[in-house]
Image (cartoon, rainbow, N blue to C red; front, top):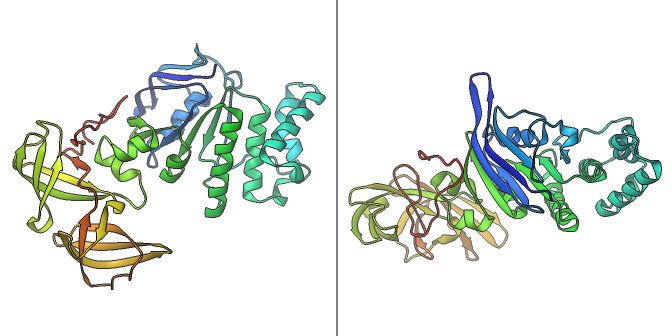
Amino acid sequence: MAEVALEKVSKSFGAVQVIHDVSLNIADGEFVVFVGPSGCGKSTLLRIIAGFEDATDGDVRIGGRSVNREAARDRGVAMVFQNYALYPHMTARQNMAFGLKNIGTPKAEIEARIARAADILQLEPYLERRPNAMSGGQRQRVAIGRAIMREPDVFLFDEPLSNLDAALRVSMRTEIARLHHRLGATMIYVTHDQTEAMTMADRIVVLRAGRIEQVGTPIELYDRPANSFIAGFLGAPRINLIPARVSAVEGGALTLDGPGGIPLHAMASDGAASVGDMVTIGLRPENLMPSEAGSLTGTVDVVEQLGSLQLVYATLADGTAIVAEQRGGKAPAIGAAIRFAIGSGIRHVFDGHGRAITAGTPLAREGRHDDA
């Protein structure tokens, strides 16, 4: 079994604590993505699991055993790095074989593993090429092939697609997802790219300042973010965060004074808000659309043409910048007055501390911020 468990893991560099009491369970065969802004601790946490960094406190278990005192090579993990880390004077075949050759693995077994990895990653035509004769995507596949050769319990990926162009990133995302389904292995993947997280993960772990903000499936985090930070981090274009004031409360039903004093309505957990409270409304761009009957008014700033989809950037009457989706129809003119309708109601409301108060929204878990 290759489950991974972290129990109250902390990490300090001198007086600076970068990981704060992180607890997390990753199931055998699960694909988990660590995501968050630069400096949030995601790569440090991955390196602690790999054994390249020691935890200051807490316990790391792989397959049920504590690995705190085990060297990286003995933990049953294989790491794929951002920079490929291939030997330039070796062919792809030699790069893939190097680690096993060093530990005395029989030649026949090495060749069998190379054949298997090359088949999985479609590397057969490139085995005799050196890295400088391969594209970035081919080199990254060789690096992944080298990890497969080790037959690890856990695969660790540290921003492996960051050096690739946009088209190759999409292609490699698909290849890594296929690899996971084919191998059924436990995989932990670090990225700052929320699109990679949303499209690849079984579960996403959102980190900020060395703490876990929320853990869940991509759709759980997208539909029910625990706070405005998570709501703003996941989703492209970003969610619209619009300030409003609570003018009436009846049970969980809120009446809000929106931009320009426009009355808006939302549902919240009972007792989560009082009259006079300042809150923030979260509206995804797909839930906000140009409409002559809309209640929100503003001025068009920019229109992005994306084929069948247009993104309309505008400034509301109170100065709040927003973005809305428009499918089909003529694009509005820059500087034109515009109205927006809310498509399926207000689904996200955050209190003055940024915490979600929308009815049915779970709290962030495992080290959440209370000052989100």
